[in-house]
Amino acid sequence: MTATPPITSTPRATSSSSCPAIRPPPKRPSADSPESRSAAIFVNEGAGSAHSARVRTAVALARRALDADLHVTATRDRDELRAFLDERLGDYGTAVIVGGDGSLGVAYNAVADRQDLTLGYIPAGFGNATAHLLKLPRHPAALAGVLLAGEARSIDLVSVNGRLALFAGAGWDAQVARRYAAGGAQRLRGWATAVTASLPDLGRRHRVKVVADGEVIHEGPMILTVASTTPFYGRGLLVNPGARPDKGSLMARVYAGPAMRMAQEAARWAARRTPAATGVPATTLTISSLTSRPIPVQADGDHIGEMDEWNFEVRPAAVRLIGKW
Image 1 (tube, rainbow, N blue to C red):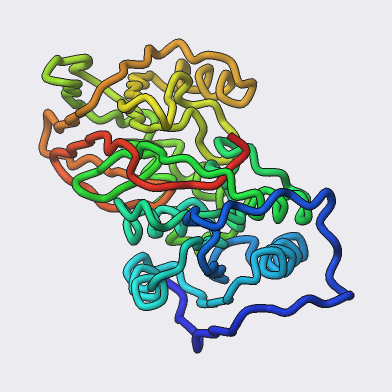
Image 2: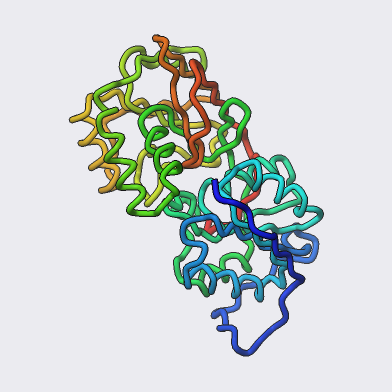
């Protein structure tokens, strides 16, 4: 965890001729829509690419386009970020989160079931899985245009022992996430280091029972089980095709292994080809350890703990999210 510096909150921006124009200007939301109410941008500078020129430009353009307040913090601690958001969300109609998937995941939990508030997203992490689901452009002006257009939909999320997330994984990917965070979340170098350190774990599979809607779908060795309402993991990897945020169900997929088969599956993810592992739609999912070894779990790329049993449940229409739908 990084120490949190003094928090910056500033009033809405005024127009400036030095700020690049957004072309073409999208249509503003109607006066009675939630998006027409006041907006704010919440920047988590603890995210991997929050200090990049691309992200800073996107923030400046979005702030100008939305006439938004700006709130800034820097943390990799979920509880700190949640407290920061809870203290400032207030009556905003639009809250744009600048951070990684984990930062956005904290926001899901802060605004869940508030249909009067719409979330926007400026990707500033390393994996940025959500950006692929939302089809967000990388160009700052184009991204600001998407946020200004305000095309929002209610999306389904996955509740992981009560914590809301767009995607979650039990097993090997959670071990990688834990090591990545412990190493300071150093982007590509940190990810490569975490993956390398986790390779021996591929040969030490968990023995689990996986139950979907009351039916056993797997019992035995497992490298990874995914539960999500998006087909994508970080970097756009197609880990869980068939998962959608508007079906009222999550998609579960068990990657049993062994290591060589898992390597083949990873190649399919990168090529955006359908994995050999079968996806199972469900509203509830339980993963239980068949040994004394607890199961690690990540949610939206953040390691959230290790337990003998984890419960996953779809939460329909949990939040409203802006994207290119």
